[in-house]
Amino acid sequence: MTAREVLAGTTGPAVAEKPVVGRGTQLLAHGGLILFSLLATLPTLLIIMNSFKDRLSIFSHPFALPTPSTFTLEGYQTVATSANFALFFLNSLTVTVGSLLLIVLTSSMAAFALSEYRFRLNTLMGLYLSIGIMVPIRLGTVGILNLMVDLHLVNTLWALILVYTAQGIPLAVFVLTSFMRGVPRDLKEAARIDGASEYRIYGLILPLVRPALGAVTAISMIPIWNDLWFPLILAPGEKTKTVVLGASAFLGQFVNDYNAVLAALTLAIVPVVLLYVIFSRQLVSGITGGALK
Image (tube, rainbow, N blue to C red; front, side, top):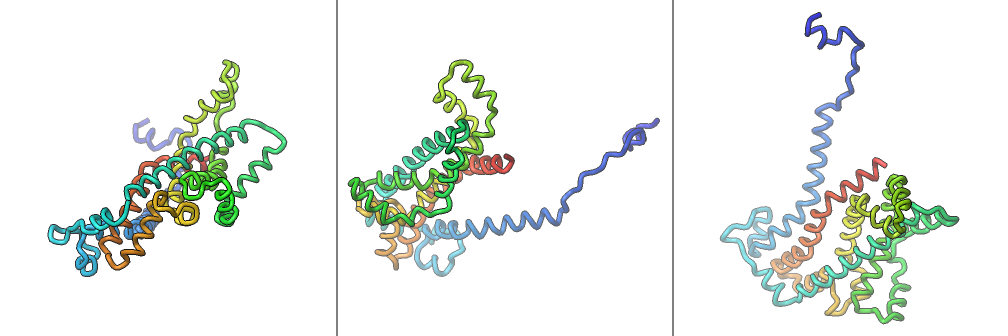
């Protein structure tokens, strides 16, 4: 028997080849994704790029990169002298980080309880939390405002942190519960046999669901940073303005100063884009893991 006959499989049954997706289909899919990515990112890139150009170049060559003759920081100088964006950034960062910490802590504890313990209202509690995903929290704006007035939290960052925490918990619990149910029960039982407390077991599970925690963080972060509704209603004071509210007020004041407008928009956009890039891998891992489950 020759080597060619062995390689040809003459001594055994032929192995069926798996169907291969056509190259044309792959190119079409990748072309569609590239086009969508360009449509999504091009406006942001144009804003950032034109914020470093003089006013004449913004209108005459909006798609051109800044050159030594067109480069200017006039818009950023106007922003620095006319608005306290450093304080606005600090407020937004405090609200976003504080809300995300509370969302991750409370939702992971609730997800651990729903996935680990079987009690009479387990399913009903999960359905009750799911309602928060379908019903926008803005429908309760009047009640939330009255509650914050009674608690003397109006024009404080705590008002925003508590509202955003309540807004993000339902979806976070829904995502984390499915991941925690996928953790092998033998690991938890072995920890209990070794004498670990429930809090210790909860702490041991968190690293195993890290992709889900990253996905929850990325999903919850953008709505919190970009929100204008609740900062305008609950914290419109000059000392509690977020960067989005501060940028909106600035745009209304300098609506004809396009250098300043683009600079303010850039300062409001870039931080959340950078944070999203940092957590994007965890977001993709979490979504992929959830789909496989």
